Image (cartoon, rainbow, N blue to C red; front, side, top):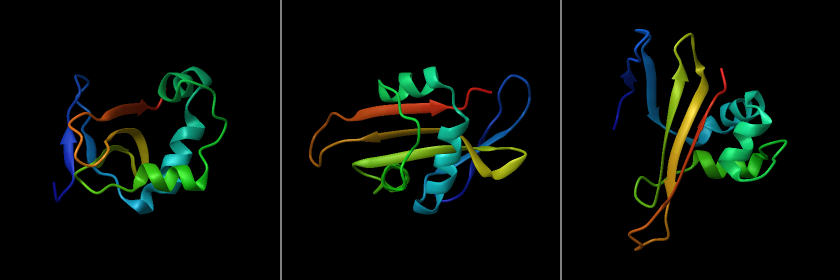
Amino acid sequence: MNKDQTLTPLRGVEIPFRVVRPDDAPALQRLHARCGERTIYLRFFGSMKKLSDEQALYFASTDGVDHLGLVALDPEDPNEIIAVVRYARKPGNERAEYAALVEDS
């Protein structure tokens, strides 16, 4: 996937999405900060007050094979991420861990 894609929900608003990039780490931290405690718990199976710089960079770095992530961008501010979905697997393994986080609003 080389260019941004879009999704059109039922309300008719197009949501652009693309592959996550390392420079998205600060936007992932802002997304995390906007999510409620329950949303964070459901994503990480525990509480996490802040997404550290190291964690954000890990989630933003993918190789397209064993680690892949997509981000949905705010249609009104494409510098803000409103959702992220990714998978990670050990090289050579057919199974992967999948996770998604969608901003509460």
